[in-house]
Amino acid sequence: MQTGTPAPIPTAPVDGLNVVLGGTGGIGSALVKALQARGETAVALGRRTHPVLDYADPSSVAACAARVGQQLADTGLPLSRLIVATGVLHEGAVQPERSWAHLDAAALQRVFLVNTIGPALVMRHFLPLLPRQGRCVAAFLSARVGSIGDNALGGWYGYRASKAALNQLVHTAAIELARRNREALCVALHPGTVDTALSQPFAKAGLQVRPPSVAADELLQVIDHLPTGSSGGFFDHNGLNIAW
Ligand SMILES: NC(=O)c1ccc[n+]([C@@H]2O[C@H](COP(=O)([O-])OP(=O)(O)OC[C@H]3O[C@@H](n4cnc5c(N)ncnc54)[C@H](OP(=O)(O)O)[C@@H]3O)[C@@H](O)[C@H]2O)c1
Image (cartoon, rainbow, N blue to C red; front, side, top):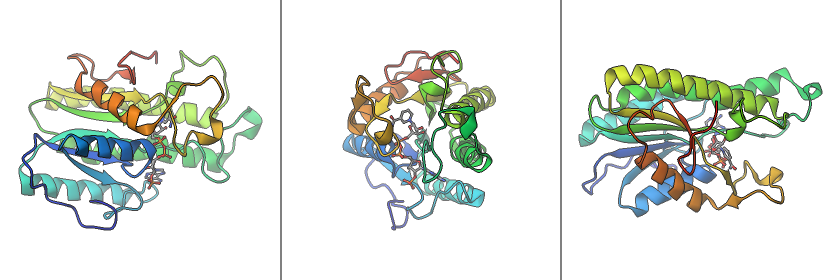
């Protein structure tokens, strides 16, 4: 499912299939590259791939999941890592709010659609594709600023709230997932500050901004070393727990 081409059928023997939603974004495309560099099969889905994944059209989430399900059936591979690297901080007139005076219904709806409702639909359609036994991971990229306990600065109402709501969805889905497969993990991950289109307008002196390739390697390290009992948690790119 690379851009504009039909879904590739893996030819090399691999342990499982990796699916990166938002695999055409800054961090998502770096994750796809990092997985492919390891010789793994990684499917990237986004608004410019075929099939299209666009949260503005909920049926596209179902259609993408059906396509991945077909690929799993055709290849006999398990879905080993589902990584959700979609998200929005700013988009045209939608900008992070500095004050409650900037709160706008349409902007809030857009931010919640992309950061919360879209990933919720991903849970509905993709989590049932995870194997019923054996280790597998569903990782949703969240943000430290979604932590209520860590919020000392204020501002960015919509982004913070939509990520806090995403974290609750992840924790809830992890409980349901454990009933299907005790070895399956579902987590929220903060990638750190990464040099992508999302962060560029807000890059500040003093922030540790890392290239997407570095963030991707760190996130895969975290995903592959999540300990037993960590499902439903919120971790940073070093694997450290973040307060809700
Ligand atoms: N960069 C950072 O410093 C940073 C820090 C903390 C958290 N994060 C989180 O990390 C994740 C990835 O961010 P990034 O930095 O890689 O940003 P990015 O380069 O802007 O990528 C965002 C991704 O979200 C997808 N997306 C946006 N709107 C969508 C929609 N309506 N339907 C489906 N997909 C949509 C984009 O799809 P297209 O490719 O089709 O445009 C793109 O793949 C996000 O969840 C972000 O909140 C990033």
